[in-house]
Amino acid sequence: MRDPFGRHIHYLRLSVTDRCDFRCSYCLPRSHRDFVTPEQWLGAPDLRRIVAVFASLGVSHVRLTGGEPLVRRELGEIATALASVPGLRELSLSTNASRLATCARPLKSAGVTRLNISLDSLDPDNFRALTGGQLVHVLAGIDAARDAGFAPIKINMVVMRGVNDHEVDAMVDFCRDKGLTLRFIETMPIGTGGQQAQRHFVPLAEVEQRLRGRFRLSPAAMHGSGPARYFRVDDSELRIGFITPQSQHFCDTCNRVRMSVDGDLYLCLGQDNRVTLGSMLRAGASDADLRAAILEGVAHKPQRHHFLDAPGAILRPMSALGG
Image (cartoon, rainbow, N blue to C red; front, top):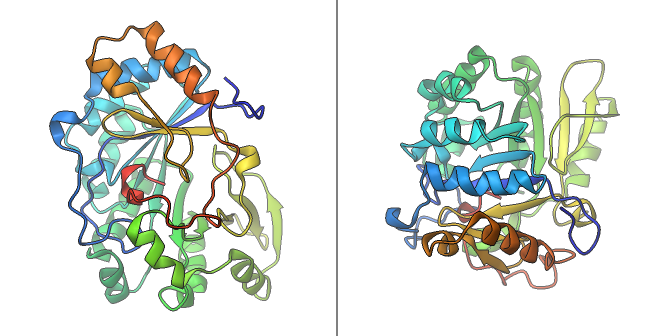
């Protein structure tokens, strides 16, 4: 499946909820209340059906996202259903890890193969100010994921000036000591929270330069479908990635589409064009109808986002599609 610019689309990011037990300032502002109602959520059978259609079109990697996927009680059932789809080679999950201590082993058994964990601070007070949550639960979740055999585990840190940029070195040391992969991410002006976070924007070239003053960074390969540029730190096993949607956009190599919890297929995180697959499904669409709609949508996938040209254009919060 290729878009008009020849990009191979083989990665689906699938939101199973737009709700979260955290309220990270750049993602889900505390004032937000406009959530999709549960009766509009797609259940495990419908999600499996749609994913099977995507797999028939060449999609081989599905990532379960949110909001926070672990707040959805049916997540284990959804993971089990999707893991059995023919042609799907990888089922991964993005999480804040607050509930992972009790869920890691069941998710591994259900067929989840890899984890990305959001962790923006190692200071309990700063973490609480950023998220409204408790750091101790996240750290316990990370340890449980390691014990369950997930590897590699990727830690995602959104770097914000004057908020957590002073913790970059501490995060490197933490990930090296725990055997984790670390990815730094730039803020994105999506939704009210993302637009407000722009005043804390840090181009990651600054972070990279800072780390080069302490470490030897050598280009490295890393398994995954995302856009990070990876480096090996000294002679250690630690890999550090940089995800730069603003300062060095990676749209030319985009390989993904995203679907919301109610079945809207978004062709670009930074634009609002969509295909209403959920509505089609509820209206009785056949697999052939869904397949044709997906292909028609991908045929109109835009060439790039417009974060810099129209920074206030996307009103939905980041939690709606999981980044």
